[in-house]
Amino acid sequence: MNLRMFLIMLVLAFIGILLVMGARTLARWLKIHHPRRASAILVALWAIVVGAGWLIAMEFWEQPTFRPNDLITLQEPVVARTIAADRDSRTLSCVVDLHEHLGVLEVESDSGTLKARVESNNTSAPLYCPIGSEVRIEIAWLHRMTITRR
Image (cartoon, rainbow, N blue to C red; front, side, top):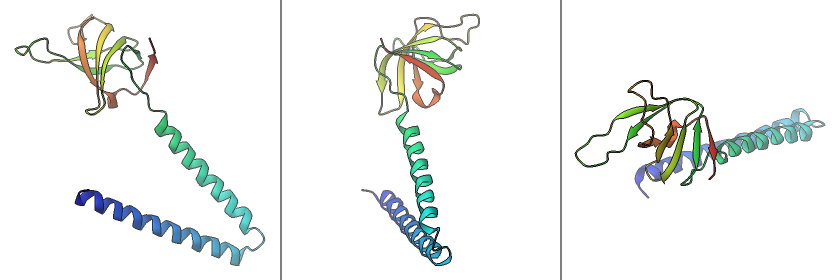
């Protein structure tokens, strides 16, 4: 473990201790000033915290997963980089338009990119990716899409 990770964990532990101390102080204060309703208030606060934690966890777990041979239908235009066919040609940036399709070829989870083939696209301008070209897209750029398993 490096020094940066150690310091981050130390700060998170300190913040956790402060939150626990604050929660205990709030519970004691409620029991002293509102002895009849303290347990109901604490249960309601606990339910709110658990509900918020559940919503946050569901947001993390609902991230899309890509597999080879998936078909992606885009709900917004995405900028992609073409994959060079040989060493001498260079990569170009191009756009895959709204409601067009990409076929997933490979998922590179370590770099956070997706290698795909353009299966349909708007070809009215040279800035659009040609149909059949292989492109590389960063997964973080894909916000609104539909995934079809093939």
